[in-house]
Length: 178
Image (cartoon, rainbow, N blue to C red):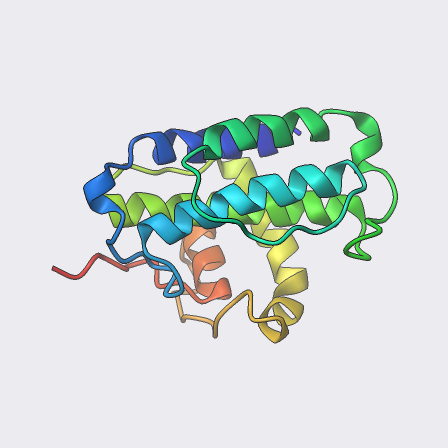
């Protein structure tokens, strides 16, 4: 829970710093420009709040501009011990796996957003270690479901965060096009 909280709070800080004129900027996540990425983060927080309550997976709604508040509500739900128990009725996965999925989203999309908007970003080392270990186990399923892209080669001695990015299909050297 503390790792998830730090990752969500860090990403919320990045979202708060986005300027409206940056909404159309590309991100390292090819599916999203900045506005669509923030909207995706809003949906992720709302969906994982629902899943943490034992509720359904939700459809993504329109951009609302309230990711930090949604993240706070999601964290409040997951701060209850029962949120971590059992299997999600909606997803058929252990609740601990869902928590790791949320963590991967926060860590990676935080980087996406920071890169796209010129913000500094250094993820929590413990969050990176947990996200990398989880993703290493789930990457093939993620690729089959279209969540992760083809791997990007990184040096074997690359730092763990760069290995995570490469594993899911991000180029750690990505810079916005001018």
